[in-house]
View 1 (cartoon, one colour):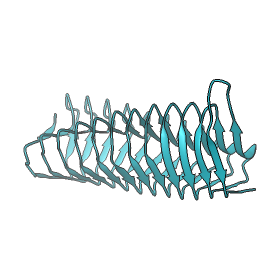
View 2: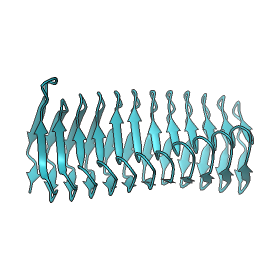
View 3: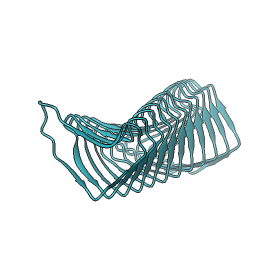
View 4: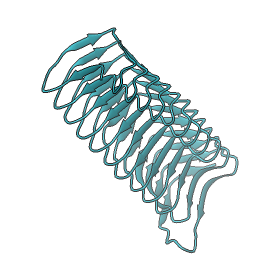
Length: 275
C-alpha cells in the first residue's frame, strides 16, 4: 500500500498524489487515525482507501478515482468520516461497506462506478447530503443484513434502481430526493425491509417504489410522482404500511396491489392522497 496508518497513529496527509500502488492507496487499520485532506488517490491495484479493524480516519476533499477495486472500502469494524470527496470511475462500487463497518459519509459525490454505494454483510453507517449519480447499476444497494441510514441525499440518474434493498437488508430512508433512475426509484425484495419518510421519489423510468418477494416497507409522508409506471407497487408477496403519502401524476397509476398464488400478502394503505 502507498500509505499505512495503524495503532492510534494520527498523521496528516495534505495534497499528495497516492497512485499506482500494488495494493491499496491508503490502508488505515488496528485503530489507526489520520487526516487526509485534498489528496489524489488513483490507479491503485486494489482499493483507494481501505479502512478496517477499528481504523477511524477523517477523509476530506480527496479525489478517489481509477482504482482497480473499490474507491473506499470500510469493513471489519472500520469507521471513518468521509466528507466532500469525489469518488468516481472505480472498477467496482465507489464505496463498499461490510462486516460491521460503520462510516459517516457526508457531502460526497459518488459517480461513474459499477454501483455508487453498497452496504452488505452487516455493514452499517450513515449517509447524509451526498450526491450519488451516473453509476452503471444501482445508486445505493443494501443487502444481507446491512442496516444503514440515508438522510437528505440526492440519488439520481443511475442505470438501475436509485435504492435497491434485498436479501434481508434493512435501513431507513429520510428526506432523500431519488429521481431519474433507469428502473425504480426504490426496490425492496427478498426479505429486505425499509422505513421511508419524507422522501421524494419521482421521474423514474419505471415505478416510484416497488415491494415484492417478501420485501416489507413502512412508508409515511413521501411524495411519489411523475414516474413512468406506478407510484407504489405492492406485488407478489410485498408487505407493509403505506400511510399518509402523496401519490400523483404517475403514468400507469397511483398505488397497485397485486398478489401471487405462492405468497400471503399483508398490506395496509391508509390516509394517502392519490391523484
